[in-house]
Length: 129
Image (cartoon, rainbow, N blue to C red):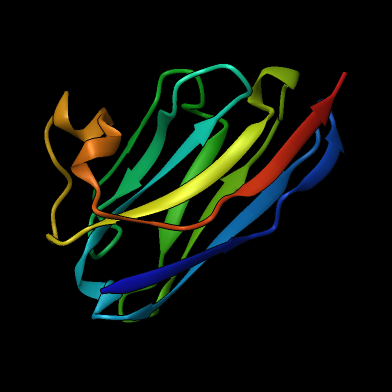
């Protein structure tokens, strides 16, 4: 079983940047695809970004494309989400999740929280206008 811990959240102003980290322990996290999701108050958890085991293949929600970048270094148990040009609508709790497979799923399975068996506890990102 993989244990995931997110960090890096905080309170920023619109237009600022943040980098979230997801540190993993346990099973060979570096061999698995992973994803970032977020959940705003009163809303469903939504897919933000995903990366294959090597980081060579990535996918993004349309709402964050060209602003967010997911990255990981092969063999390292940490995945990052670089968030630029933040907007108030990006305010949410951000979660990382892992899928026990090296490759990203095709859509729509990629976007479903139920596709990922392990989750972190989340980190709060608040963007003020």
